[in-house]
Every structure is written in C-alpha cells, then in structure tokens.
Image (tube, rainbow, N blue to C red; front, side, top):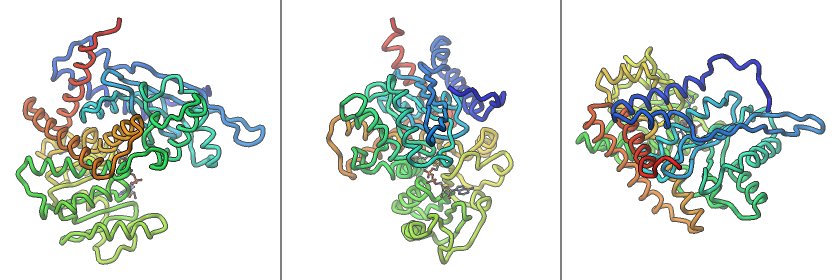
Length: 427
Ligand code: NAD
C-alpha cells in the first residue's frame, strides 16, 4: 500500500461522510431510534484497503490504493459502484457506501449498501493498464465480493468494459462463469436491457408521480433540464413523451431555450452527430447561460449535470416550484434550507436518481436466474418501484411534517433498522 504523506487534514471525502452522518442523525432523531442501533449504522460493517500493483512499462511498477466498503448488509448483499479517481479516500468511500444503503432501502430493494474505488487518475494510464489495474483490484477484493455478498457496478470513470473485466477475473479465479458478481455489464455478457436509460426514466417517473399527487397534469408543464448527458437527455425525453414542455436544456457548451418547447429526440440526434456529443450548433433555439437556466420560471427544474450547482449564492434566483435531483448532490445543504424556506419541493437524489440501482437489481436477478427480460418488462417494473417509493416518501413527509429529503432518509433508516432488529444482533 502506498502512503501519501500529502493527504490534507480535511478532504472533500470527509465532508461527504460527515454530511451522510448528519442526515442519518436527523432521521434517527425523527424515528426516536435506539441509540445502539444509531451507533451501529454510523459505521461500516466492513472496510477493506488493498494495494494494487500495476506494471506500467517494463520495470516500472506503480502501486495504487484500492478500497471496498460494505456499510450495511442488513437487508441483503452490498450493492454499489467502483470509482477510479485520484481523490478517492477511505472516508469518501465510507460515505458513498452509506448513501447506497439508504438508496437501496428507500426503493425497497433486498440489497445493502457498499462502494469501492481506487485512488488513480485513469486518464494517465493506457486502456491495457486500466484493464490490468481493474483485474488486480478485483483479485484483491475477491474475498468479500460475490453475488451473495457484495455486487459492484460502474461509477465515476468506470463503465461496462470495467465490469466485463471483473466478470473475467472472477470467472478465471473461481473456474465458474460469474456474471452475477457485478451489474452494469455489456448486454452481450448478461447486462440488463434498459439499464442505460434507467436513471433518466426513473427521474421522469418520480416527477410524474409528484405532479399527479399535486393534482397537476403533465401536459404542457414547463420543465428545464440542466445537463444533457445520460441522465439529463433521457429524463427530458421521457418527460416530453408524457406531455411536459421542455423549455430549456443545457450542457458544457451552454443553455438552449424555446418557450414553446424543444424537440428532444431531435436534440438527442444532434448530440449523437457532434464530435463531443454536445448540443452546440443545435438550430432554432435561443442561447442562455447555465445560470439563467437555473433561474427560469418553470414548474420543474431537473439539475442532472454535476454536484453543487444550486448554492447559497444562486438559490434565491430559482423560480421553479419543484426541483428533482437527477445528479448526485446538485443542491448544497445551505441552498436546500433556503429553497425549503421558500416553499420549493425538492425530490432528493437518493430517491430521484435511484432508477439506475433499481435496474441493477433487476440485472442481478436476471444474471442469477440466467433468464433475461424484454425491455418493456424492465420498464414496467422500474415504474412500479419508482412511483411506489415516491408515494411512500411523500406520505412519510406528511406524517413527520418533514421535507421529502428528510422523509427519504426516515423511510430508509427505519427499513434498515427493522431488518437488523428482526434478525437480531449476532451472536
Ligand atoms: P454524463 O457525463 O453522461 O452527462 C453529464 C452532462 O452534464 C453532460 O451533458 C455535460 O455536458 C453536462 N455538464 C457538465 N458540466 C456542466 C455545467 N457546468 N453546466 C451544465 N451542464 C454541464 O453524466 P450522467 O451519467 O448523465 O450523470 C449526471 C449526474 O447524475 C452525475 O451527478 C451522476 O453522478 C448522476 N447519476 C448518474 C447515474 C447514471 O446512471 N448515469 C445514476 C445516478 C446518478
């Protein structure tokens, strides 16, 4: 294991874990949770730190540090992505693993929460070197992963090829074809149909459920979507199909608006033909800045680009009535307070963008059964899971007089605590 003496005293990863702990504490208080149970849920069940040696060129050995953390397996095997990023630390992985526990619980999946990562900048490695790194990391964490223990998936800088390399490593090391060890695989290797679109479709399902509960028909509802990658473009497409009027979209090239509504399938076609997959050059729309998009007078705003987009500085400009967090953490905690005080309803990320993990669960089921579903089956079931979770979170918010964010944590923490209580503390 390499020791990085330059690690700062506080790190963004610490902040992430501390914020997850604060959200747990607030749910524990609302639930009047047993202090012992609260103590148990504050810490991961298991954390593994591994060294990942990779021969970069002949004679040039580099050693990276990898982690796999299982926060809770109270409701089922751990589930969570693997990220390759220079900023990966144990505390960040711990915080992300805890959030996976709540994300799986709020959507009622029979899975726990886990996360993994390697502190590496993959852009500085060749594809072949990333493959070797992935395979060595997989071999190192093999004792604690598996279809009945902990099922990794893609995250930042990892994708379906990374998952295929993991399947290969586990298959070679165990002598058994092992597609159920990960999700987010290529469809040819047992990936689920509909996985790529799942997060965006899930964002759309929760938005439509909320509009229904508010007695607002989707037809003509003005919506702005920030970010036009996987999540943003599919959300915009699904909401437009349901009748919403998508009046603004954006990506790194800027914002694009049309009060009458944007032809989303055409915009997606345009990005497919652009060398960097951008909206740049899409004709017939007025150009706006990303800041202007966030301040548009719309009913629904979907930030689906990056974290920290709505902050204490710009929260007062937001005119949307509903914010649905497509991205992870797009609203800072200060902004969350300001928006809540202003009566804006926020659908939190752990619920809004959980569609990806719901279909990952379907993929795990399919890979274990060796029987693969048609796309309409995947989408039908995804809609049931997302709408049901949204309905429960809204009714819990009423019961506890809380925000949907607090309610999502209350639902999740209560479910995990109940499962652990039913099982009893071993031995
Ligand atoms: P992506 O890379 O496909 O798309 C990101 C989009 O955001 C791109 O269109 C990019 O141009 C745009 N963008 C980047 N910076 C921007 C800026 N400053 N202003 C406006 N647009 C900007 O990524 P994605 O998979 O769509 O993920 C988006 C977010 O959703 C991330 O926070 C991710 O963690 C989260 N998320 C994704 C999934 C999934 O299944 N893909 C699941 C859960 C959460």
